[in-house]
Length: 90
Image 1 (cartoon, rainbow, N blue to C red):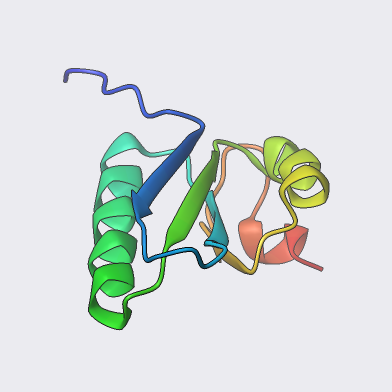
Image 2 (cartoon, rainbow, N blue to C red):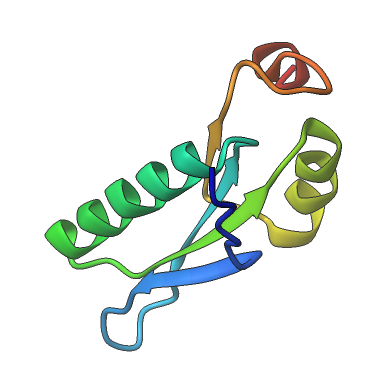
């Protein structure tokens, strides 16, 4: 299977001068990252809100990005290689 590289941060849509909603996507599977990014992009265009997606590939990365990125929303995989996402959320 071909590996697809996703940028660490991706702005999916922009809406005027409003500050974008920052989403922390915690997912290790490339296909799931692409699907989630597309769905979040569709939702942002539907409501007319800019979003910025910050992608973490592990629970360890997510903890660091949580502090650095101050997300408005976290989309968390519950089956991460370095621990269950639902357990890490506590």
